[in-house]
Image 1 (cartoon, rainbow, N blue to C red):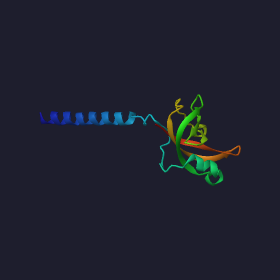
Image 2: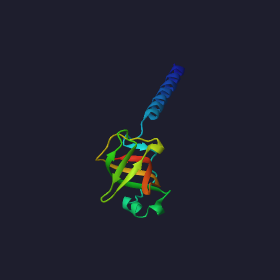
Image 3: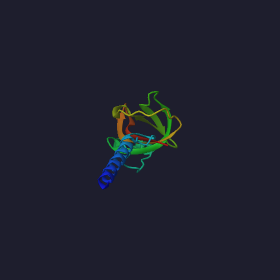
Image 4: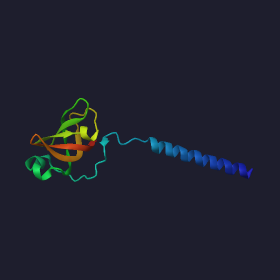
Length: 128
């Protein structure tokens, strides 16, 4: 009888462990997060990037603002803070977001200069 109880105990433990691993393995990333996790919440003002783009070129920044226009496929958008707007390109990072015009977003990415204008190639986005 004692052996049967031990077997049942082991089976119950294995089943519980399997259930925990299944739940953990199937858990999804926060639905408001896309691409890589943002590694730094030290915000850079969009206006600072636009004022001195050369000093930001090639640097990773975290910016925040409101999505004012967006690609129908979610691969790029214009992000505006209180006074200025910057183009955020997600295509190089193979990231896309759902349609969220009017929503607030935080973006981490690298500043590049394209056609004499600074842009951010986003690697991670958090929608709020």
